[in-house]
Length: 473
Image (cartoon, rainbow, N blue to C red; front, side):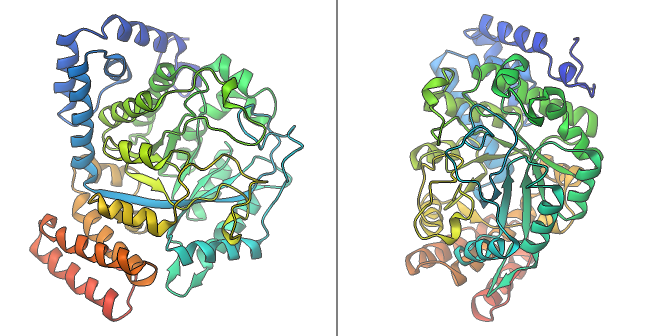
């Protein structure tokens, strides 16, 4: 089918022919220094690159130009997101699933894994455990099973999560990562007050998609790929894209991912709120050696850098699938959100020892949240638990307008510092608290408005000394 980013047909806005032509163009120009230099100059305007232009940078083999690409990615990340890193945790509700995805241990034919679904009381206990760590933002995960995990269960769980106030803890934003569904169901999720709706494409290569999803509702490539359009039609402002790198060839996935972002921007006026970059990794009943397209750390780092350059406004997420060393590397190149102290099993947060019988994938970074916070502080990043934009209605096109104009930082840094102070006062170790409060003061010069700085200092004092919480600009 002919490529048309304005189309609502999956095979037209993700055109195989267009991707192959773009990759051919990138291969032919991977050592074209003049073209690559011009693309780097264009990207410095911070308005992004299209999928074909970005594919040339990804394919670039000139060492000096690659260094320029990495440097530019870091500069763009700082321009849009400063030194803030948003933290969240996944919460697995159920691993019942009717799909047979070949890369996921939750697949229906796996008889080795224990099937578990949390009750509302068990969800309360999980949420309290997460609140006691200091988390304010969750990403709900559940397998696709209309009988065991109907939408009504997800909606009830969201209501339960938002209702729990434990000591100074509260979950202020619930993002949702569940299967593709109908406009009507997306409308119900929107009315339930979700933050971002996240759905990974897994792979944009249609033939590979069919082989990797041999049966179950998820096997419908078009229905899955067109889900974000239905979500936006249902009123969800913020959507999050992602592919599972390693399922197909990474250059193909990269181009498809950017084409999807371009499609959302063209049709809805709002690109992806986030882009996630998971890689295939070991798990129960899954042998990564069977996936010949797995990518190296160097390739992974370049993908992150090129996405940041191509889609400068988007939040970029890396999970605890990645090691501390890899996460540290890509933080500099474009990542703006990370998970911390994640448990990828159903009911894992209430168990002292990490259960492995319901794990979706192996966790490489197993540090506590406090250790992750201290690590970020030591690198001069501001750990942020901010949810202010979502709760103030700065979502969708309103958020993008602020982000693209770089005005969002007038809110983001003060909000990040206040949520960091909440964490330091309520949950941090003494060592982390001392380092964090020093970092907060060191960021005062970056608050451009004297009035905002004055208000910020007053609120920080109220958080530290009067026990007040939940301020926001």
